[in-house]
Length: 288
Image 1 (cartoon, rainbow, N blue to C red):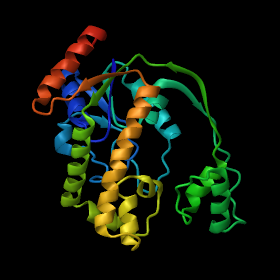
Image 2 (image 1 turned 90 degrees about the vertical axis):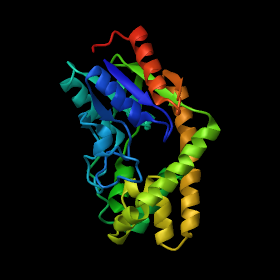
Image 3 (image 1 turned 30 degrees about the horizontal axis):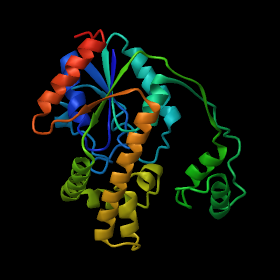
């Protein structure tokens, strides 16, 4: 069986996924676009080796920071793992809804045209072309490789919004006020654990790749390092962007996926785990 654990940032998905993996002797497939990258540990809230409790994790901490890893790549990799583990129970966990849908639903991605390398154009000219294609562009003007990739990228075609694998989706949720408190405290903890040093290491190496320029926690600190904002402003912006991201996650999950929501009991997380297990037992012929 395939059990998917979704929800907004910081809600408790990792803890739930490990508990269910132990219950059903399952492997875990990461479904977070930032956590696939090596070295992005604190800012992505990546599960530590201790938190993984010996459970096999896939597509976690597996890509170099300069690799351009797309949802198309994730679709190929995740389906390969699913096919290779058809005799196992599988837990897919993460907050990137599009990745989950690409893995489990009938999406088709056209190949990119790699013929045009735009050698004749300067970075500035390539950047202007990209802005014309996407006015809301969020790519650094000097990230030539990613800009060219955008220009060569073709559209995504959804054939039918039907699942190709039988699965059940468990969503973890809490009140808005509680979630915002969790997010704010989580950011403070990340800073205490060394988020600034982690991001500074990449900035000093002049690494301007997609995960660093797009991921919350890194992009804000890059602005601080470049002198555009103060450290206090950067941290406040990380909190604000994290809260906004949580809202977008809810919107996607509610509109794009068939989610079975569970209110998390943070005073006794074991009760929430038990509720989820009972729901799975009633609604899915689980192998234990």
